[in-house]
Image: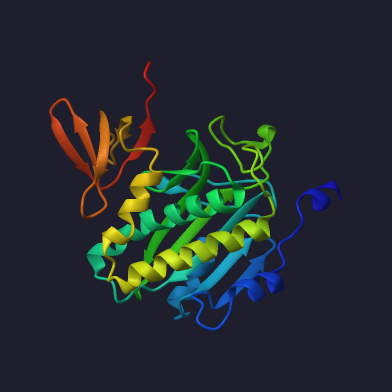
Length: 269
């Protein structure tokens, strides 16, 4: 099939060999042909007591989810779709939300390294290239305790396959590689390095903040934020506070936001 030549399947044995080694964070890498949601698979494993380091990737997700209950659907084998099980039990609970910022930072850094494209992070958990969405992250906390980290990264998505005009892929951005095994391996290695440094520092935000600020597409921008209660707020995104909340400077003073759907505004908006 044409699609098989253009979008080869992931090889679980190959990925295991590259990622599962003595001392590695990753303990097992599974590849599913199709599943409703890799996050759901990892969440079930977490509730059954699976150890940290399990990764499940899928060639196709029939019911993938993004933030705010949105769907995340891509053609089979066109994206890196995976979820990982983390158990940062030594990190104080109030610092766990920083994982939601660490993961997109790891994805953006890995894409910059192997793809050689200027990926950036958009608060709270998207990865962009020139304001076009390349990847989304969905983080869920499970009793146990555990964190389920879901990553959807467009690799070979074509222009006529985009779900929205603001979506993009590594191929559309002219990346140096669009080999999914290479990209997946780079993302998991970068995530492991950053995650282990953060855990060793007891979740200290300073392990994340300098690089996050450097790769932020949000700081210094005029933004419109839709809050969970449906209210809209406009202002300048300035920084993060010590809990990872976005600080937005408005006409009536600064607002600190724990959640919200951010739109980057252009000068004419």
